[in-house]
Length: 359
Image (cartoon, rainbow, N blue to C red; front, side, top):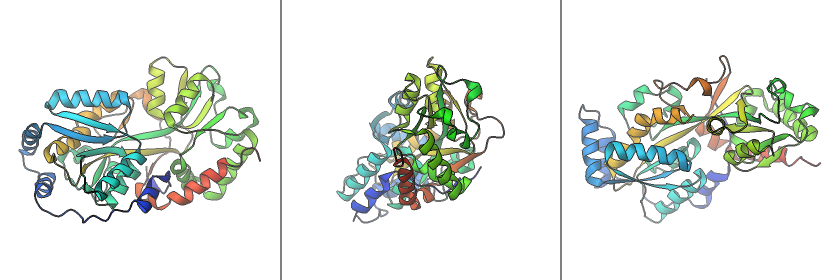
């Protein structure tokens, strides 16, 4: 498995128009306390963090987790620690915008963040995250750990194709992206509107000329129904409005399937995966509770995520058999640094391809 360059949606463009002018965090007051506990590795680390978190009583989290996933994780966190978890839900773009705007205004309300890797990397570049050295990192897959330790992967979303089991026969499923250009798929294909990072990863893996030529042919021959949101796209597969969709999140398809919906997934090689990550805000009024949440997401939460069909970052928590890619399937991870650097290029390329429809 390896990292590939990719683009992302317009989120990071916010940094261009909302560039903050605050002074980087110094080592005064609450920040020095956070820096000390974030780098502490003594045997009593967990006990010290929990004691401090209980005194603080609450942790404020910005997250992109879905309502159901957030409810499961929140219940487990509060039950185990007796610390209240206040969550504000938003898209990765909205989380980035809110934190940058708040920092520019001298407001630091959030304690911890859990969202997509490119947004986490953006927050790191803006010096809004506190580097953390947690013992929990030793149990994680190497791809989950960034060299700066300002954020760490909690789980990775595997981007697969999904199909309506009542509208598409399993025996007829395409074996490659080239197969999607066959005329039998005319009017039956869908894609996600803001998946330029996934598209960029394919370009890096398959070659730019080959990938652009292939998708131009798919669009010209069969068309692509473009929908915004991976969850929406998966639900349209369930309804039959989009018989076959690329790309969708494996975990969401698996959740729908386990609930009895007529949907299943398969991988078109190379399969792309994108990490979600957790980080601690560099300016926080609840440093111990923030650290407690950070460690929770890398420990107890890993089994909860796996049970909910996610691919956990922990090397000790296996992906369930029903959610595992077939043996030998090539899996590549998006590199969040290159996702930012290549954002504009891949976004323009992807949307130019989608705009060819009807021409």
